[in-house]
Amino acid sequence: MPSPQKKKTEPKKDFQTPRGMRDILPRMQYIWEKVRKTAKDIGGYYNFSRIETPIVEYAELFERGVGKGTDIVEKEMFTVHSKSKDRLVMRPEGTAACVRAYNEHGMSHLSQPVKLYYEGPMFRHERPQAGRWRQHYQVGYELLGGESDPIYDAQIILVAVRFFEELKINDLEVRLNSIGCKTCRPPYIKELLQFYRSKKKELCVDCKNRLTANPLRLLDCKQEACIALRVSAPIFVDHLCKDCNDHFKAVLEYLEELHLPYVLDHYLVRGLDYYSHTVFELVTQEGKLSLAGGGRYNYLIELLGGKKTPAVGVAIGLDRTIDLILERKLKVIPRQRPKVFLICVGELAKKRSLTLIEHLRTGRIDVQESLGKISLNAQLKSADKHGAPIALLFGQKEAFEESVIVRDMKTGAQETVPIAKMADIIRKKL
Image 1 (spheres, helix red, strand yellow):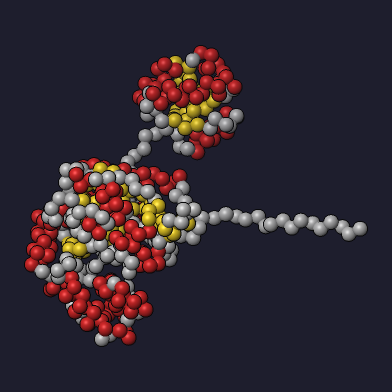
Image 2 (tube, rainbow, N blue to C red):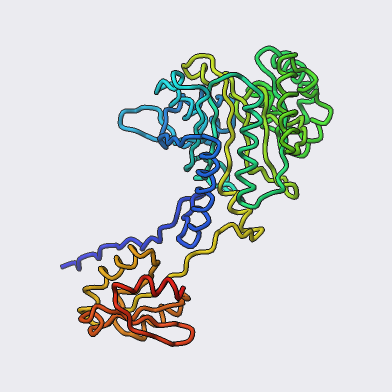
């Protein structure tokens, strides 16, 4: 009789995050919370209301809005396979989603302009590298409607600058350009193509494709050979129509009035099709790392089904911002209130410990505990490890007497106090 074959066991798999994704651990949350609070406070001061759009949107929203010839649409969108066979993607950026919401919910009937801000994850299937994640986080400020007034371009730039200043990042360089409108852009692109077609053999593979798909992106290429070529390329500011020239000049005058230094960058075009007129980036002076970018997009609302409506906005990369804060060791976090440490000994004390913690909460005393640990020594070690200045010893005797022992962890001095007066006494000691 043949012996039964042993069932093959599959090797144990150690699960990890997918490539380009990562966990934001508890030890990092304090700085993320600070950055998010800064985004909220800045938005509140300048009258931007928070909006939250779905993580999943229809693919056509970005194909039509961002542009089929862009890297985002051609290479970087995460597709979602739905049972209904809708063509859905995980949002790669926030502006098109805000415009969709503006149109869908009739915000054009509200007092104009409508100021919106958002914060959340975006998804792009790009090559992971320093500061670039496939799930990355952005804060965006969008100003939709009203007149196509240069003062709004300047205010959006100001909002981004103030956001970084609140985080003690004070040395960013504002780089600006104008990429014109539907009137002056076609003649400029025609001249740009004439220049580059004669040098097609010297272009990188991507730029050869951009000749037909997205000519403006020829100026934005990061390949050394293409950078060398663009020095001789025609620049947009020399080809602006009168309206665009006046608009751009007024933006610069507002920035000068605000004493915000800026640099004209003739090769800055941004990577999305919806931009027109002013485009800008905020970059670090030493490493030229881009932390934020935006501009005017006067045609996008109409393109996505609304009326012809001017708009301008900025998106801020939170991942790179936090990396820079850590790299520079900037002290952006306010001093935390010290926490006392609650030590419970015995079943009765443990049973009443949650009620005691609620007394501390209503008395505005922050507390840490290790309620699952039984021995006094183990809990004292935890208190010491957390650096608690004060320990509260709560045992059987104290539970009966409705009191607690307040112990100074540095000197060892301690006193027994009634629970009713506990919060006031601890506050004085802290």
